[in-house]
Image 1 (cartoon, one colour):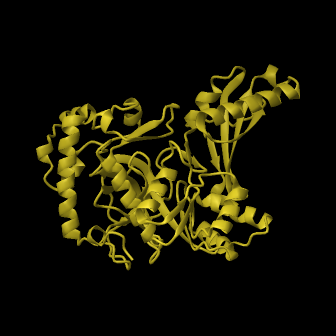
Image 2: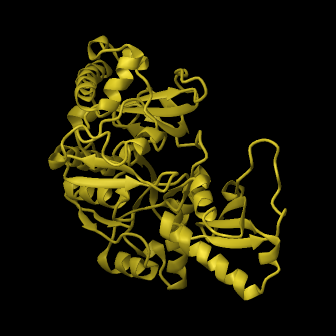
Image 3: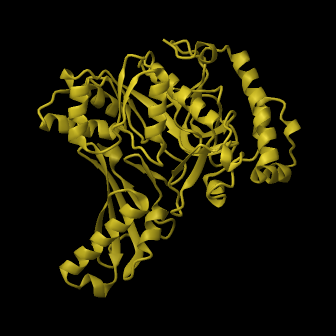
Length: 434
């Protein structure tokens, strides 16, 4: 089953003709309506009329996350605020979020692409979709919610947390599709065992998981413990939110990126040049239908590869491989984007804390954990234990309040953390060891 047969199965020549038409329109619009893009194109000596083929896209400058921060909050919007019906945001290194705005048409497109994604994953109108992605400024919850409603399925807006109630609701309400982070799905499985609930007794049959990296071995574990078909979904708030790309349940071999709305490129992150099809590089996306905040050649920093080979499901849109890492130092912890520099900015505001810290990321009980080790000065370290405990708790609260992530702070004595002559090693990520 395919949700939008006309567009999802467009022959490649027709799809590329549509892409070019929409790309030309987008470049004209951003040139006329967004000073940032006009200045960038002028500096590169390009006018919109120079874009006459899809390969001309490579003449255009990249857009970076920092450009969004520098334009905070609404500097990259291409329409007046009275046309913006929804605002979402994601975290940034400075503590200021990157802000995205949606027109009514943007919300409609997003809803349709999420409906497409649900169907690609094996969901249908008769499903009861248990949505455990977070609602709020994070795009996950509402993105999945509107897509489920567009599909015509029943949606349960659970949001995250409250695990025992999640299990009760899945059992009593007959949930058939689960949407959440992959790590939370395993946590649900363990919590269900403690509650005496066997997932095999539930009606769940499909899980759609994203917002954090996960491996093929983790997929097998999820499918075994939850007795479902586990599907990988990809998105990022800057581009739209969830539903930019998704695996089809027929193949589970790469994520179809909806090319009638997004132009993907894979580049060498060092040189910025395109890499050959099938080779790994950084995913760059140009939005070609977004009204609120169109982005041209946005560097996602996600590492993947792309194939245009036909898929057994009949969809003609290219497939990108499961994300294998990032070309920057961003961490994704329980679906929250965290940069070491964000933690640093919190630590450096606290007296008697030294500028030496280490972030240790691990996975315990199938959930990501973050430990922040930070040096304190000699005088403070020799202080009473209760004072050190109070400081550690205060730092934990500050990080939670500022960044929305729970961590364990461990205060260590001076010169405990290894020094480096080159780039300091700020992060030890142990998640791949399990």
